[in-house]
Image (tube, rainbow, N blue to C red; front, side, top):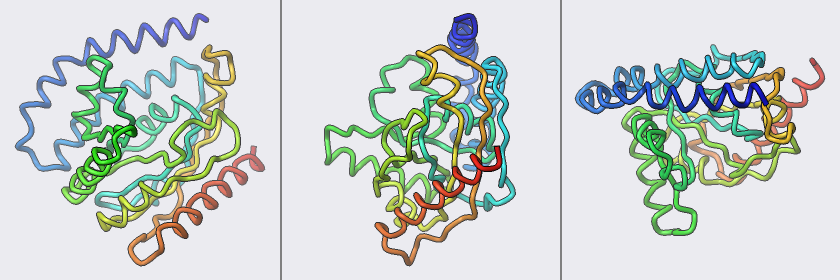
Length: 239
């Protein structure tokens, strides 16, 4: 319970503390994409590194050198709500998320999602969702990277669920590499503990980039899913 309270207070306090930085970022729209994205990424990354320390967890990352230059679409399995701060802390390349529109209701956080060029999808409105994905394609073409959780919901440490194809079509339409990421152990921090926070060993494995351009997107979806599952299994065997 103590860690949960500390983490909650830290999140609340940091959001308020970050308001001046949000205001400053709004004045930097004229900067080149890479420069502005780097500045926007710095605060969430600092927040995430401190947050993970407060959970008492140990995060190990393999494959950082495999991330190519330029915009990419990171495809990751989705164990937990903790996946997001883990990736923000672990990866220096700035990125946004494709997420559900409901998070837009959260004050300050919604402004940070905008600053990070996140795209929020209204799953109840198919036409609007298609337009949102087209917006994401244009952002990638401008030079922004994205993280996609194609399972659509958390597995909470269970088997990797079926992947939806939207994120893969996103990479194909934008003409950028897919970088697979296997995340293991984040559900041990929160979801498996009756929603209390406990320390865990978390492993993030980044795979070789995949060129999606000439592949059938359904075949590509299964290929990347199986690769992530293999990396998760390899991580378990090495533990």
